Image 1 (cartoon, rainbow, N blue to C red):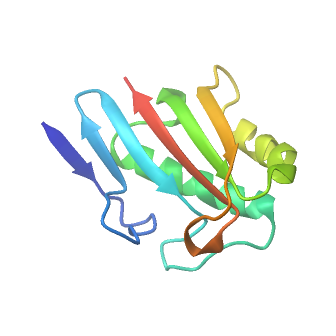
Image 2: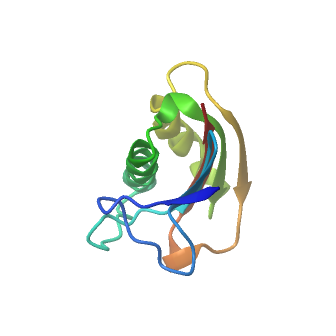
Length: 124
């Protein structure tokens, strides 16, 4: 049975979706952008933006009893692929060993005109 996951310390969904859904031992976390729990966007630079996205993912993972070590796969959407190295530097700091599978794609536009969005799937 599907369970909806909500962490009120992470930004509320901005559309008709859940922060995450849990099915058995698999957690599907919706794409996160650099909104904080007060609805403020953090787009000062791509590194700050990426840290906020990863913080949001971490809060949602934690709410469901998971951690970054449980992440199986991530998808990164970038507005500008020239930011790849800086994003990779920040992203990699959250996955020190045994990083998950991943793809990174450049897209023309993201919600609220952010520069990055990341979703993930975790499992135990």
